[in-house]
Amino acid sequence: MSTAEYEDVSMMEADLAMTAATSARTEMETRDVSVWFGKRKVLEGVNIAFPKNTVTALIGPSGCGKSTFIRTLNRLHELIPTAALAGEVLYEGNDIYSPEVDPVHIRLKIGMVFQKPNPFPSMTIRGNVLSGLKLSGMKRPNHDDIVEQTLTAAGLWNEVKDRLNNAAGDLSGGQQQRLVIARSLAVNPSVLLMDEPCSALDPGSTLKIEETIRELSRDITIIIVTHNMQQAVRVADNTAFFLATDGNPGHVVEQGPTTEIFGNPQDQRTLDYVNGRFG
Figure 1 (spheres, rainbow, N blue to C red):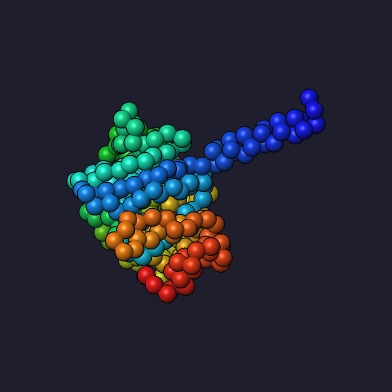
Figure 2 (tube, rainbow, N blue to C red):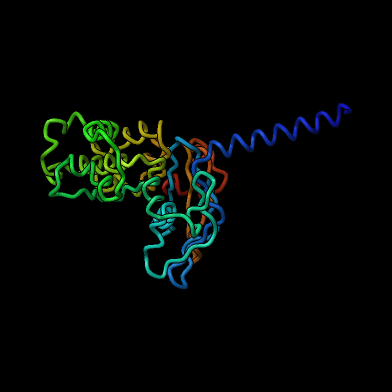
């Protein structure tokens, strides 16, 4: 083999190794995802890769499709009448919309935390944590350990460990949101979706949720919709900027490391948005 041929083979092997490494690092990925409600197209051609054990922030003005997009990532979108989707949503390399895939299983592996805390208010704190296990029929032993571990991971254990049998409705809004996070963690997800989880919370509670997000990202992949630019900078490793203009569907204008999106964006529209000139 000549030197030139050897170099070509070596470069090819390096490219293959890099591709394999990138694939191994990617927890989820969307490929050319477009979304409709009836005849109205609300998202077009969204391609985003979500690296394993990172936080990705989805930012952009209201109405650009961020919340719609995040609901496609665990098949909640399909529960809306007239909803339709084209493209692929890959989790661990497999399309979650394939006919043979059980959506219930997907929603266990890809959990969701909504804008407003939604614990079962009359159920106990302990009962809330374990409710996901019971509703899904998932059997995990050592419930006491699960309660402590998930509440600890959600940053709530020290605040509630002496009142686990109290009603969840007795908790503050910020505590309820962290309880919901603990409930999501009890079913052992790989990915946690968060749709503006702090928008209804005070600054102190927001800070605790952000600390929880950073801690959780050591073990799971987190995708968060936020309108708070400072929050995106504080918690996200990567950021995708969505925009919809002049009646056109929402799309991703720019994406990349958060430091680049906020510090050195390549598109003027991104620069204008992150600097508060619109939105």
